[in-house]
Length: 143
Image 1 (cartoon, rainbow, N blue to C red):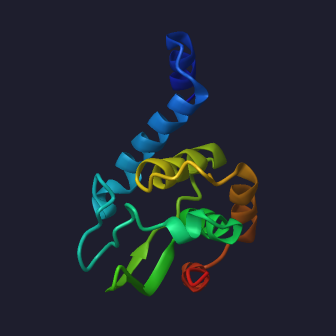
Image 2 (image 1 turned 30 degrees about the horizontal axis):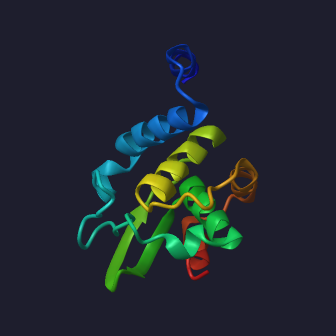
C-alpha cells in the first residue's frame, strides 16, 4: 500500500483519488465474488448494495453499523430489497483501518452516490474495539 501511495503522489493524484482507487481495488479483491462488480448482488445469496445503503449512510448510527459490518461480518436471515437472504458475510478485521475506510468510501460513494457522509476512522476504530459476533451485527442492521 505504501508504494502505491508514493506512486500516486509522484503522479500528482490527490489523496481522494488514491482512496477511491484503493477502495475499488479492495472491493474487487474481497467483495465482487458475492456482491458483483456493480454491487448488484447475487439473487438468493448476496443482497444488492448499489443504491441501497442510503438509510445507513445518512446517520451516524448507520455509518457505525457499516463499520461494524465490515469489521465483524454478519450471519443469518435478512430482508433486503424485498428479498430474503440467509447466508454469511465474512468480517474484514484483518484489513487496516485505512483500508476499511477506503472500502467503505467506495461502497458508499461510488456504489451509492453519496458524497454527504463518509465513515470516519473513529467509527472504524470503535468497531474494531467492540468485536461483535456476526449475529450481533445482524441485529444492529435494524437501525
